[in-house]
Length: 92
Image (tube, rainbow, N blue to C red; front, top):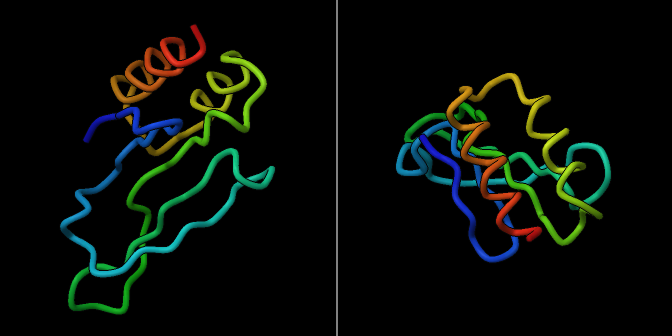
């Protein structure tokens, strides 16, 4: 899975969204900054992490975003590098 910039948000996908039938959003820390997208797996009652979403307009600078990205433990180094690159481009 990869990181992508969608409008003013960076989304880091952990699992393919086609595996899910329903989604919920949960704030982590300060309201609106970093959110978990939790999905219910198709044909089950199991909920699991689908992606992370960073609302970039809620951050004051790129270093704040990069610090949050580096703290994530469930994504690969490649995903972190992609997300950091996108954050730097957004805050140019």
